[in-house]
Length: 224
Length: 224
Image 1 (tube, rainbow over the protein chains, first blue to last red):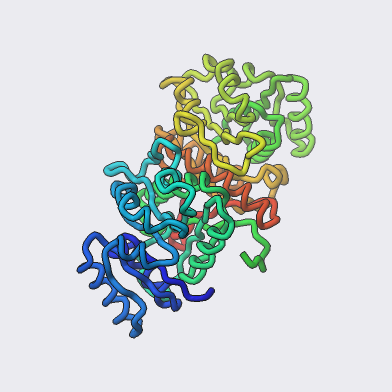
Image 2: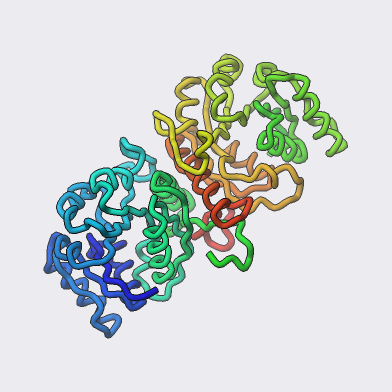
């Protein structure tokens, strides 16, 4: 796809910085957002050093949201709605890809979907119709994202009510080295959000680190 | 595993009769339950003819629940709680494997988890602590179940609060030709229930019939 300017809100965290690295590697311009502009600049500098290219810039979350074409939210669940409230105006007319998983420590291996049915549905409710919210990347290992070229043995379910916004998210997932599927309306984000706790249980029980899912049943030569 | 006597409540439907066929094939005794004992006997006769062995018997749902060691509920969502209310006493002290997916026609491709968070959680609530409820098989193609030997390219998430009951369900899934995983407490059934609507969306969008999921990230020689 054509290069985009992507804000990663919470871009200093493991999941956010891993996605930012891969998108910068794919040629996109990445705005690393953080509550701490200093830490955001550090993360951006690390990415640029690793890529030997100036593709990432660090700034506060609001500036990143203001400067982007597409925003990606990658903050802990407890910070999700407060963070969005602070950047809502800057997201008007844009696409927000929400990576939030409603994990509630200490029982992160137990599905605890919030009232409203899903964390991402609640994000859409807060942002209103002016922002096209899509959900994606909830099940992907942050550790593997952070190693360019490391295979991601996990498919991405992309859920959203807007067809074009879903297509953007699917293309961005592919640019980051993943296979992604149209998983239905935004309400279906509940499946991906809940699945994360099941995968955490599987990691613990089977003593592995990066369980994931693959979608099966596709023709061998499927171009998804 | 040692042969069990398994009641399949709603055993004349596609999913129920497919599971019944595979368990009978694996050497278990299967009690096909239905609101219509006549249709139950027809399904049992078909299974016995196909296997050239007398392993299945047809009867009404209550008789099946009374006669079994382990019960499996495979009725449409709209009939789930009424059916359970009618056999509750007969299930006391037993394991119930609930296959229910809370699909709400016509929007079966949209996740619509019920109040209470999950159909199976509501079953446990109705049945009380005297019945050990486990959830499984929500994502498996009924069509493939009905063909003995047809590979099931879909893993099974087994969720439940009782360890022994989960182990029984995992062993039964393996006897039916599937790979099954401990997916966490009963609350995690929400993941498998919600995933079905995402898979229905994938089937429609990518013009396939039997999408499923595989768990990834296991060691190549994992004995799960």
